[in-house]
Image (cartoon, rainbow, N blue to C red; front, side, top):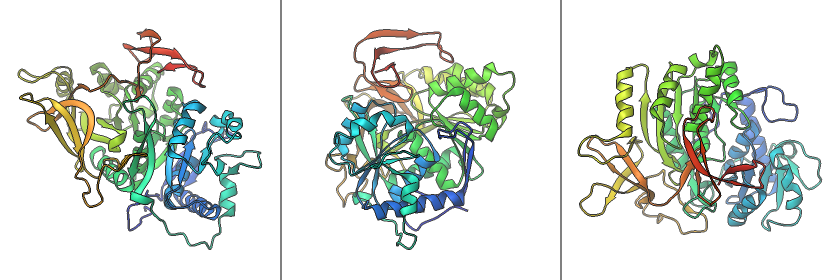
Amino acid sequence: MSFKTQRPYLPVPDAVINSPAKCYRHNCRRRQKTGEHFVEDVLSLARGLLELGLRSGDIVAICALNSVCYLEWLLAVAFVGAVVAPLNYRWSFEEAKSAMLCVRPVMLVTDESCNCWYSELQSDAIPSLKWHAFLGSFEASNILTTEMLRKNGIRTLPLNYSWAPEGAVVICFTSGTTGRPKGVVISHSALIVQSLAKAAIVGYCENDVYLHTTPLCHIGGLSSAMAMLMVGACHVLIPKFEATLAVESIEQHRVTSLITVPAILGDLISIARAKETSKGSQTVEKILNGGGSLSVWLIKDTRKLFPRAKLLSAYGMTESCSSLTFMTLNDPTIETPSQLLQTSSKIKSASGNQPQGVCVGKPAPHVELKVCIDGSSQIGRILTRGPHVMLRYWDQNPLKAPNHINEVWLDTGDIGYIDNSGNLWLIGRTNNRIKSGGENVHPGGGVNLVATSRSGCRHCSGNSRCSPDRDGCRLR
């Protein structure tokens, strides 16, 4: 039975939340938590935050690897009417500092992956910060811990959830067109309708066991987590994606659902193929891909490895609270191999009188799309509107006037057209961004890299430059 409220609010399930053996904890032991315990921990943390002085509209920045505790913080902060600003754990401190100076958080929450930031934070690098909290245990007099806040929460304190101004709940950062982090303000309503769309189209339900393969700081990982919370599914959390750990988790916990980007799916297939037997391949029933289209060979390999899985691909962006359109690439209950190949060939080239492009499927029920055509061509800028659209970029005026909700069109920055069947086709971008692992990457000079021997990847190219962050050399 799900935990329900009478108004839009990030839902909390009465489900089971599992943390695999290698979950990022000091003791690195397997940990399980029931839905009831999960809800109690969220509410006790919310009480502790209220007692501390966190108020409606305050910004709380979080930088951490995926964990049950991270999920609890997201819900507790939202419950008291504050706004969560998840930071990318791959960022250097300078990148995170730039984002925090933009949104001016009153609290920063970190885990062990950000221990190197501690000395930097002592120099008042972020003037707006009042508190620094830690997900685990940390021996420092000026740092709060999750357990400390829970213990300090007064049980008799009235606990009525509240709203931030505009109904905002999260600020997700996207690279945008400038290459600098831009804060996208997302509302409760946007997350709710996105969750409902994923539940309806992908078929998420309370019987699902969902593996978190993508970071909670990304809108794809966050919105899918909310969808699974809404339906009361079971969650399996690993700190960050590692193909071997993911395959082990799928087998150990009999995972039924996961989301991917092409690079993640390729790695999963490579690791699973190397194993003589893959017990988990028979349990996976739903795979949702985002962050880029899948090649024909990758679709076929997915069919072989996960024969019972319905494979869908989604097109979207942070500004639209994740997915705008969905397309089924394989459904073992209705499709035949020949139909699959026909679908794949359509992705590569369009028919006779239509321009080339990539088919990304049909819009979700709550999404309105239109193509702004210039001249006689059927190709134009892709626009969208509806409750899924962001409120605004942080520190910019709202997209919508209060009395004209959902009437403003958002320019996606993509170019394409809609065919006679209602499918959206992408032709290109209005700028020169590229995608790497589901993230927008801006070419910044350096050595051109062509990799053809990467495990699970046949062809890729990009610009590589050494960076002083903890990931070493990475695509910029």
